[in-house]
Structures are given as structure tokens and as C-alpha cells.
Length: 171
Image (cartoon, rainbow, N blue to C red; front, side):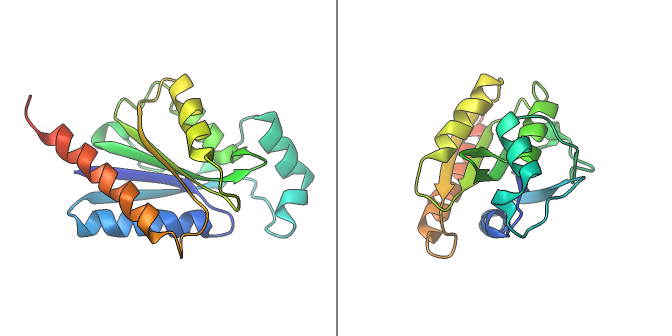
């Protein structure tokens, strides 16, 4: 079982979820590689949602330069997990740019998760965006607080493990 986790995190919430997922998967015997995307021209953390460039990049949907995927080869993984915070109701510019870059290049199942301050099913919207681009999304989840929603994270990991175990069974 080989898993890639690709995520972007500005404040640390999405990183915390990604690390919890990684830890639980490793404890279950999976080999997990983690890739933290970074904007080449990173945004200031202060007043993040009032930054004109953040607003423009996010709402316009334009591609941005990102780093953090050195050595990433999607074909060596059994599943790819993509995580993003939600900014202005959508995934971050780095994640949008990543999924555009790898459109048609990831044939393995994809799971996605989002982090947000508001309990809304943003991961369903993310799933729909991914599927409209040809990704095969098998699982999605929205996490508002990784410290108190450990059970949601556990269920997400359990779902990933079930998908991995069913793909290992001979046809």
C-alpha cells in the first residue's frame, strides 16, 4: 500500500490533518509520501483574507506557480490524497494549479479533504471539481477542527484503508 498526500497549508490546520492521516496510515502498514505545496510567491500570513492578491488569485481561478512536488510520480501510488483549506468558498490557488498540472496524469483513485472554519460540505464541491477534470474520486471529507474531529479523520483513514485493501484483492 503506497499513498501520496499532497496538500497546501498556510496556517497549519490542513498540515495538522495531513500529518494525522499520514500517522494513522503508517500505523496501518502503508508507505506514505507527503508533499506540501508552496506558492513560489507566498502570501503573507497576516490579514490573509484581506490580501488583494489572495482574493484575486483565489476568485479568478488563475494558475499560480507552486513548488513542493519534487520527486512526485503519481503512477507509483495506489491512492493519491489531496488536501486544501477553503478560501472564499473554494480550494486554494496552489491546489487548483496542482490539479490542473496533473489533469490526465493521475489514473489512480483520489481522495480529497478540505479544512474550513465553517461546517459546510466543501469537500463535496472539491470532489465535483476533481471529477469534472477526469479524476476518479473515491472518498472526500471536510474537517473544521482537527483537534476535536479526530473521529472524522479516523473514518476518512478507515475508508482509505478499505479502498486500498479492496484494490489488492486479485480479480
